[in-house]
Image 1 (cartoon, one colour):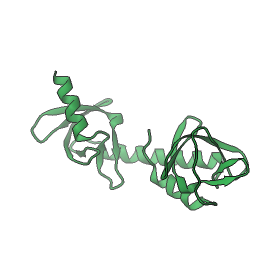
Image 2: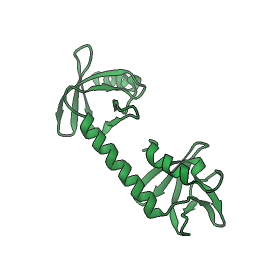
Image 3: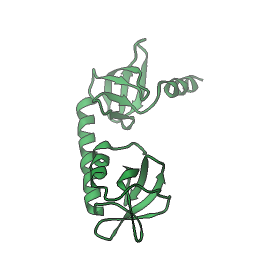
Image 4: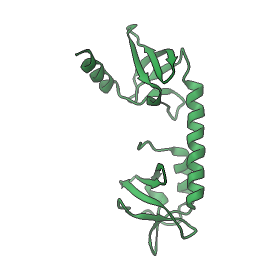
Length: 167
């Protein structure tokens, strides 16, 4: 679950008080109220994956500062969780609006996958250009930053999975 949520990330980048420093897995991140926010799960030069309760929240590396007790964010835990939950709700609303019969779907790389034929509970049946059908679970779909309905799989990975399934 390492997708970067740009809305919360952009908001946090604006809240950054200090220049970015390297964050190590296991570091406790403190809030601007002096209380712990969460723990660094993973990081690189661009992003930090922060575990906050039940959530894995990706944030831009430049949102972090350094305090007396280690890495800091210029936000409280409650504020960060609220921003993240608002973003999740908005993403789910956008997905519900886009995930309808007749909608065009692209893959993550992005290549045309096909058109949604039917939605049966948690399964989405897609008719491809060659009239073949492929069924993917609903949780494999997102709306990309441009508003396109996208399956979270590359075309290469999908073709490999279909070939393996065919035996």
